[in-house]
Amino acid sequence: MEPGYLGAALALADLRAAEGRNAEAIELLETYLKDWADDSLHTKLAQIYVATDKLDEALSHYSEALRINPNNEAAKKGLERLERQMKGGDPDLVEEEEENEEEDAEGDPEEAEY
Image 1 (tube, rainbow, N blue to C red):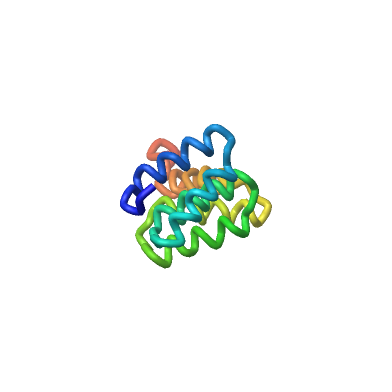
Image 2 (tube, rainbow, N blue to C red):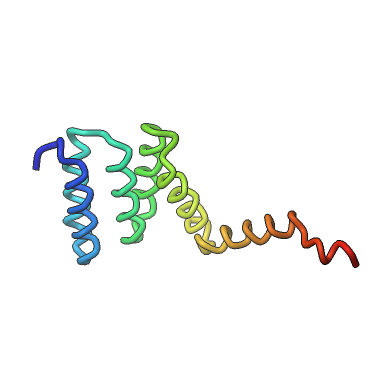
């Protein structure tokens, strides 16, 4: 596959991962990274590493994606979830707690009357 076909490589990696062929997806993405350092490649690779419980590798690739593009929202969110997971927490639980805290901070006008 030519290096110019980044979208196709990402789609093929997604397909392989969905089929449970994670090793092939990782190999494909790492091959592309040799010639083309791109934040989306690092982010996709990190996501697959998380799915295969290779958290240190995932951390490295999320960090590299953010070094290349500090505005990569998928990498930011993935890194936040990964850090919670690596600390032994539920990666989704904190997001729910933060939402509840925001709702509590806004207050309920009906409650303020009492």
